[in-house]
Length: 387
Ligand SMILES: Cc1cc2nc3c(=O)[nH]c(=O)nc-3n(C[C@H](O)[C@H](O)[C@H](O)COP(=O)(O)OP(=O)(O)OC[C@H]3O[C@@H](n4cnc5c(N)ncnc54)[C@H](O)[C@@H]3O)c2cc1C
Image (cartoon, protein in one colour):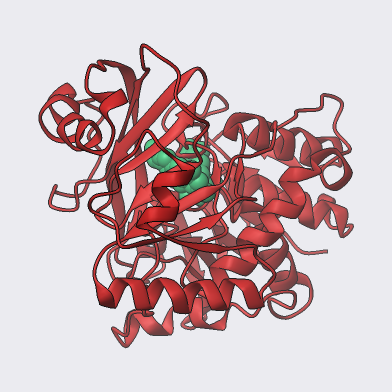
């Protein structure tokens, strides 16, 4: 019997706990999560996109497993007394680029995605205009449409994993990890805000925006910090054709949401750290001119509210670190998802279960998402859609 302490009970912690419980290890696991309402956690603040278009095959493979699980949730995630339905829908994803270099990257990425089983169609400007007549695509040379990309309710997914994990015997402790004891290159105990402590055989750090602080407790430096992401809701006076989630390489995003649309933007020039202010000027002065330029249907729209969340941004390359810390090998971190962690939650749950019980991530080779690339300062080349 080993004591597996999971720090953070968001989608990652709950999926890891669930996969360990299914493997028969529930009695060994404690999830430490300070906030059962998840007020500041990223998971309930996510938009809910399950995107199959990525430039790294690892990310495509993880999204495909996310698709498998979320699209047939009750079959894959069960055992709780209360069941949640993440309401998976296929809405599609249209990634638009401009310029010869970006078109070449789009084509190469689409070929890789197809090899992994993703349906992807390349469309030029004329084909785009025929398909989506409300948009002009003036700043687009080519786009990749993946019609099967999904949309889920993030809270339903989180609570679905959590309740199923609890139903299978996982303990959630309402507390906060405030320190780790390390002896002879091993974490031996997690100290808690309540004053008590937990014995540790394996510690899993899935504290997302707070993960760098937990890493620092064992001397592990990761370039992961919170980055504000603002989402704005708007609707149109007259209906337009059904659109997929649209994303331009410039970073502009427009996606259907409830009875209207969402646009969002990540300002990479902002200082990192928590900032919970929703800034309407970002919509009025920056986003609205761009969406109005793309479609006359958006010229008269007004912002109707929105919300703020934070990405656990990995400033090295915008991708996760999923690895053991070599200096303290019973310390595992899975963080730095940089805005695409919800779709990877099921795959990370399975991978960390395999790392703990089977000696390594077996189903998907995640060795390139190692901590070594941080130490060696060698970013993974990623020319796909960004956060
Ligand atoms: C606006 C926005 C939109 C997004 N849209 C998408 C999307 O469309 N698709 C997608 O795939 N991803 C999306 N994401 C990213 C996704 O939400 C995250 O990658 C994912 O939810 C991370 O899950 P997590 O469990 O690691 O983190 P969280 O949900 O943040 O959970 C971490 C938990 O750790 C706990 N914690 C913190 N400190 C401690 C401590 N000391 N001790 C114990 N527990 C602690 C926190 O209370 C928290 O509950 C979006 C994110 C944002 C902000």
